[in-house]
Image (cartoon, rainbow, N blue to C red; front, side, top):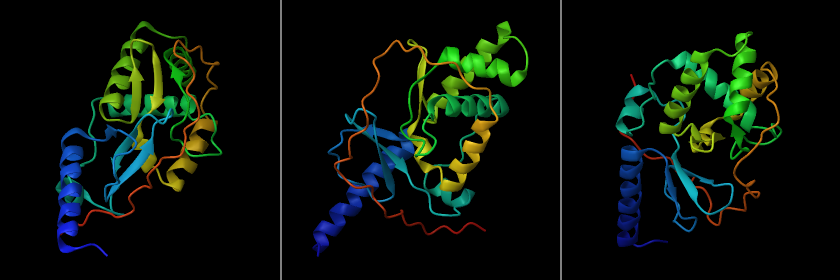
Length: 212
């Protein structure tokens, strides 16, 4: 049983990390970083780091999300951005019998191929501009990890917030997308993810705001 001072230190520790997440979004930290209440841990594919991602209260509305500093992400060209995210899920979530995170590495060539197949026409000169813009927006909001120099992409840490229902819907969506060609990678393949040395924090942050 913790002492009053230990409990205060724990609350201060959690508050500090939540302030960081509210400012910068999901954070990549060393794997031995202690667990934080309300932040889910997602180990990177090579085990060299973990991501701390906010875990929202079930059914949280706009008022609660605003108080926690994690309002819904608004992006330019939402339809185009959602289309590119769906394509990246199809390219990077190759083992759909398991969870989406961490997935595998996809390539810009795969995305361009599936994009053209979705549109039912040959690739046009404007397509690449739209695709790159969407990849940059999704990288900035941590839905994807986009390596523009290598032309490679992985699913971002935010995908660990997808529920089993979300993943079932996405599996069905992937079945209706054109199959991507095999990836040709410029970076070495990533080894399987080792076990995270620390458990995920199961507690959800408390809030006094009610969404009415």
